[in-house]
Image 1: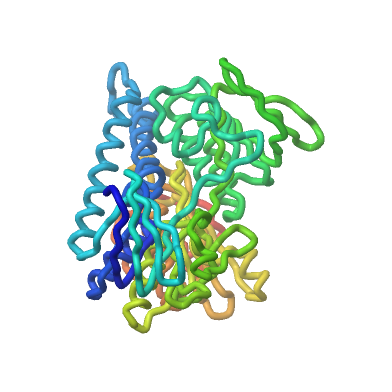
Image 2: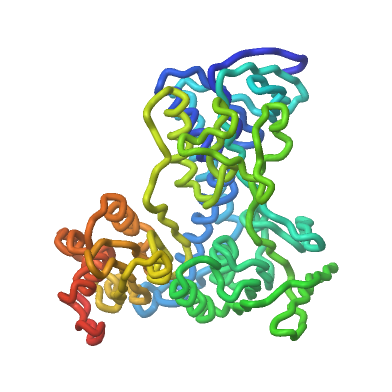
Length: 480
């Protein structure tokens, strides 16, 4: 694409991640002329360097670890079980490529056009595309959607170098397993990938500045995971501040400070994962007149996903937290429908979240503390996996479901779960909250047996004081 060209479109979408490509598909369905610009690969971070590849590696590590740790007990015996990282990476890369081609086919089928390169606004209704070969195009548009995602945050003095200090993107592409890894940051990525590494034999230490890993998550969920990590051999250091880093040919030495005491933690690699920031710089926002927040760099939007410039929209990580792909999917849909003139809004009661560790952690709605802080008289119960027949059959009795409800009305306020398949059945709780369902409604809903989803019904019965498979004091649990 040498030279300079010009074209026009009804809607320009900048960024082909979850928010951007869904917006392009929906716009195409609604008969709009769409041009989608992506500087890397379709699917964005989620598909290429996040959600999908990380879950693939996690799945492989669980299979390997389960064979070693519980296979013999279950009568599944295999000689010389090995974890072949090269083959696992080959499999992971193959499935990511397949998913990416699927996204490309969906976008093409919708009628949207895709161009690869970098787009920058040159005015309120114009942009310049710089292709990878250096060619340039002027693009005139009627409306635009910014879906540029986020990038890993970096601490001064701890900059990734691709050898001793790595980001999550680089951890996902390891070609060999290090002997030891120090994880700086005990958030979702640090815990998920730290656990992956520990399962395949890497010595892992997680260092977190806040008083608990997974800051902001329901405290009992964080404690459950901390105990599981320790059983796996992971050292968890909370309330610990990183104050310096030394690196040499043999590895790294992380200087930390906790309770006024200083020490060094040595490892072969430092995995830096302290969060993400929206990638909203270098877009020519000033030329377009779009305002960016001073704190965080997000693009403030209304419930139709419009920025302060009404015909320019923002979705996903670029717009606001939480930085979740499923939130971006919905925001992209709302932006597309808004542009097409449909009466749509980004409105919700709750957004579920899942941490893909062992146990799996899932949460939706209020915790008890949050409900009380809002002046709601509430109470909670906890139903253990140990009382669930499916959990015993799957050799997965670690975990529980906690249900929070309004005391006077029985209205469901929140559900928080730790255990196998928690991320699969949390949607039922989210739907119940969205519909204003009561805990009695969940108790009266017939759940298939044996399933992990039965924990919701059992927790509801326990909250109502009518438990079937635990005593009213949650003692004497009997699997069913």
